[in-house]
Length: 141
Image 1 (cartoon, helix red, strand yellow):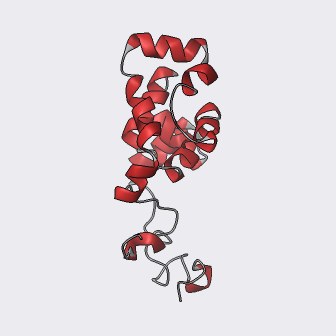
Image 2 (tube, helix red, strand yellow):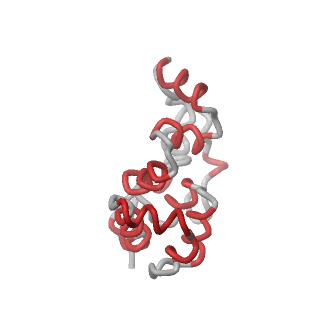
Image 3 (spheres, helix red, strand yellow):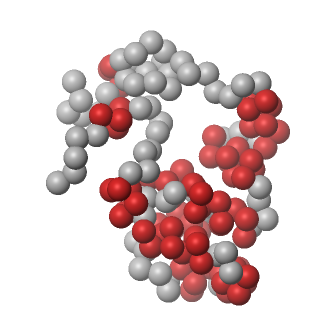
């Protein structure tokens, strides 16, 4: 049984807590394996075969193959571990973050230089901004 998590109503945010850590353990261990050059080469030579050596869920494997980092995070991935996939692909963290927001690298950089995203709509449901109570998940009233 999971603990009460009052932070679950932060729009668009996945908190990497103990439950997420357990869910993503093998995904994150796979990512950490990419710190070794030999493993990066094996992964690049046959991504699916390398992933099949890890006891990850099929959904996690598909998210890695698609480079869907947002899905990887939802499936327990930690962004600091997932960055190893980007590095293996020759991507900067900035390029990865841009892809996660639907922005180009230049658009993402410009947003961050300008001060980042507005807090409007990025607070708890029901506070001022775009996140209104009518968007609450089932059971959150």
